[in-house]
Length: 186
Length: 182
Image (cartoon, rainbow over all chains, first blue to last red):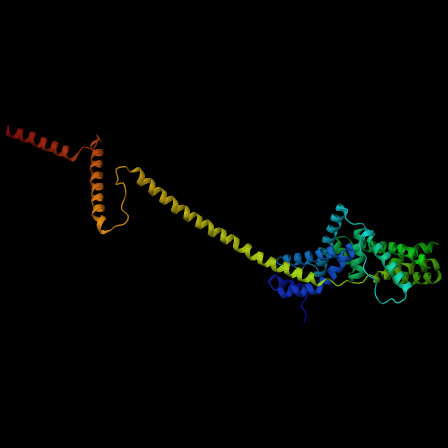
């Protein structure tokens, strides 16, 4: 029977390295993708993923399961992402236009679809990155990590209604941004 | 028009299925009839669905290696951190012991240097040749100490010497005897 995350944390506390490796295997991908989507920078996402798991390891000694493990995990990722964004802004290193965009899926055969697919994807990414950070993280956690509003509220330390409002506004903004794209292709 | 505004305000709750059944029915019927609201509804759904184009990335293999390497290094540092206080206490004890030994040796040298009347060098290695010398030195020291102490005692006024006391006693006895004889 698979160990729960909390059981694995207890094993890590007792010095079980295998338990840590299992926890890492379980959550590394989702942590990496959350950081990558939020910051749109793979190198920074790697750093944040590494830092997240180091913090988890260090905290294992005093960890008490007050909330769901993933809530605690994503809270750490969120804090690190927000810090990275602030550092980036203060350094004024990268603007959204200069950030590299990921590749389109390979299952589109029609060249015109490929161009449209690329453009749509670019628009989607640009639209998400234009969202304020609190709205962006709510959208990413809800859409890509399947978190419910109350879980996101715990991570963002706000009310459920606040989260709902952010996600709703984000959907409206995205719809407005992409409707322009829909107009261009017609 | 009023209905369109109301539907627009509740459209997102309708999409999230977080609306009362009666309200859901009203919105559904309106969307069937109103092109504008229906278009708005489809726009929002398409925008949310477009996010599916944003695929998950596979983390690079080095990331896992780097994380596990960091953890291993932390474990090693932890051991050093536990040993460091023990080593520090041990070094302090060694330091105190060495200092004490140095202090005792220094005091010994000071004492032997300030005692001018003492033999210039005390024999530390006792051999057949120097044993007699050592004994002679010790005897000299004892005699010297004895006469020094006598000198000190003579200088003390309130403490009569045994010889004077004997003389006094003899003198008293003689005077008593003379009385009887007389």
